[in-house]
Image 1 (cartoon, rainbow, N blue to C red):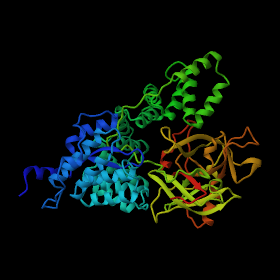
Image 2 (image 1 turned 30 degrees about the vertical axis):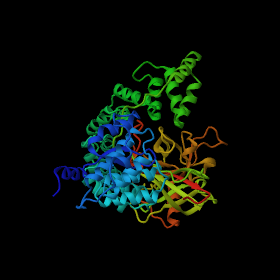
Image 3 (image 1 turned 60 degrees about the vertical axis):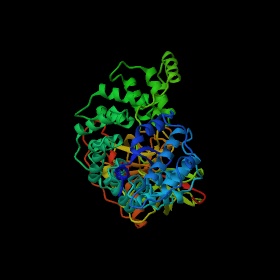
Length: 589
């Protein structure tokens, strides 16, 4: 007959606590509930928690003996697991041979937390040689025992097509559904992202809401963005602000930035004072888009008195983080700034130290959008966008040179392999297709009506570029402009010209109307022979012909009537169709 303690420990096996997400891959590892606080404190602050002296696994307990009831871990299995965990938390290096030995002994007796941690060790190469095959094997064993963390780790790997598993969103959904049913908010959050990728925004609202209501901060921000931009639910700025604020109160920088945006541009809730407050918070944390917008506030004197030195500071810091629109603004400022303001601005830049966010992710903040497949330098890379639900990507021919042997496409949720379909150097276009079978990708509609490209109309050039916190992550970037001529250089009718020159990183990026439909693709962002000319884009009519001749049917666009002279908001609905194409001259692992 089982002891009360045994039954209680077996019940706890279904109540694992997620303690940390790996910085390199997004996998979770498990701790037993009684040591939850110590585990989180150790992993977050790197301080040594109160714990007993290091215990040698081989000395603490006799060799493992299988419990007569094999339905769950034995008392000895839990003892071994806790020995491994306590040693792990005590060591500065985390995983040691003692830890490995203890976890291995616990795993022999069906300790699913020990199996998860063994998988984590082998996936990340901590304490053992990195071995993805062994890692997945351990995760599968733990998943068969119903461990939600293992289910999540497998689902994440299928979702991103990493860790030796193929891109398989059906398999990802099965694992994540099961983990979500066990109450793992990380899995609920990732299911929300998966539904967004499959253009099922209404389902994404459900999953993000479920995780947000359980206090999961990143889901609060994701849910707010759906209400903000009307994806999967009607536009509801009141709800959007409510969820953004809850996330921002946890010092979640993306939410602070979005609150700044919504208070800056939301017509019914516009509040420049609140916008400046939240943009300043995010800017002080080092968020480059917030720094750029805050620089505009100082330049224009919208809330406070105009201050060219402060504008110089924030635009310079944003430029240093790689935001090219800030670089253009700073160059313009240099033409008019007074020497005394310039000296003060430079002093402010030198004195700036980013304030660390107090937000700590004790679950999973976000899935790496650019899971690294190789350390090899690419032969070419640049912007692109999805034009069919089957994963066809349109990009510039520059990004797919003849020497390319492998292609990857970074989308929201992972870096995926792709194959070339057609390259036309004369037209400057290329098509690649994301591998992984038939998937429902979010694609952009092609607006072929020539009257949509008329002088004076607002357009947006949107693309993915390296994130502000890491060069290994990507985030959307938008540049607003106007059509000045419905022809290109030398009056070429296949092209149209914008009022502004664009960063070089926009080559291959779509030019969109206010509703997010494709009007063209950037072919020359800053013509060298014509320094006074804005960016030049190939018209959507010729894009559509190129796609049709390649056997691809794009979604047709609808005529959109643009009203008023006020600059419209960025069509954020396009974000999930933006990609970053990278090509390599050698085979990927």
